[in-house]
Length: 84
Image 1 (cartoon, rainbow, N blue to C red):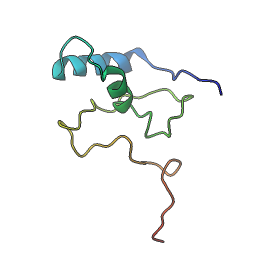
Image 2: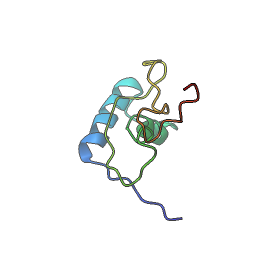
Image 3: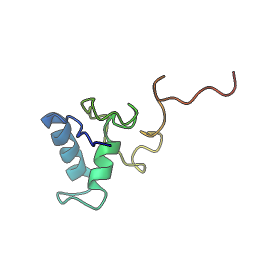
């Protein structure tokens, strides 16, 4: 199984770093990279490494408790409807 690195535009990284500095501080913390992926559409698009990443919003469950990037948001990644 080969690993493909997602295409990341500079503005995606710079927007995330700016928000991270605002909410956490200038130094990366131990959740820096995990929070970066959760702040993009990577999981919403089924972890498709061939798609370019888009920055959605800074992921922090304490700042935005209703935002869940791991929930299925499109028909390609949504589980089947079990209730008809």
